Each structure stands twice: as structure tokens, then as C-alpha cells.
Length: 87
Image (cartoon, rainbow, N blue to C red; front, side):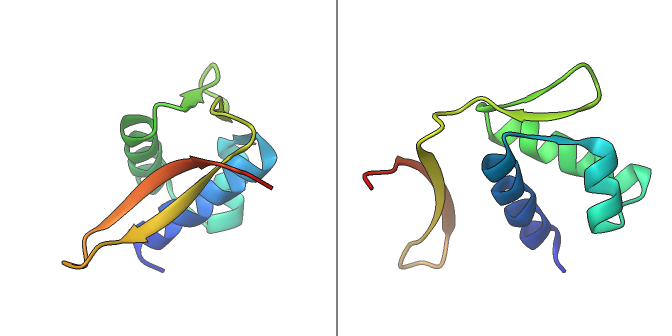
């Protein structure tokens, strides 16, 4: 699994569950300490709707009715956008 695929899976899990502990992420994705730190840094930097909860895990603070969608643009640049669910 690439790091980008890992990010996508963690973001989907986080949005679905609302909060995820770092221990859960380490166990679920077999991460070492460096991998977990890279993952945290990438998510917290790029996704302002995600916050660290006292060093124990991540919390999704975005709109509960929002979902992340991958948008593939013509030049193959992938952008993640947040959309409000209409259904």
C-alpha cells in the first residue's frame, strides 16, 4: 500500500467513526513510530477539519454530513475536496 492509499483509508475511517486513536491506527495498518508520525503530520497539515486529541488520537471536526471525494482533473492531479451530502 502506498502512503497516499494509507492516507485515503485513514481519512475514510476517521470520517466514518468520528475519532480514531493512534493505537488503533498503529494496529490496523501495522505502523511503526516513524510511519505514524508521518501520517499524523500529513493529515493535520492538509486537513484542518481533523485535530489531535491530547496526543491520543485524531478527531474529525468537519461537518458530519460532509464527505471527502477524490477529484481527478485532466492533468491527472488528484485533489481532495469536501462536499456536503445531499442525500
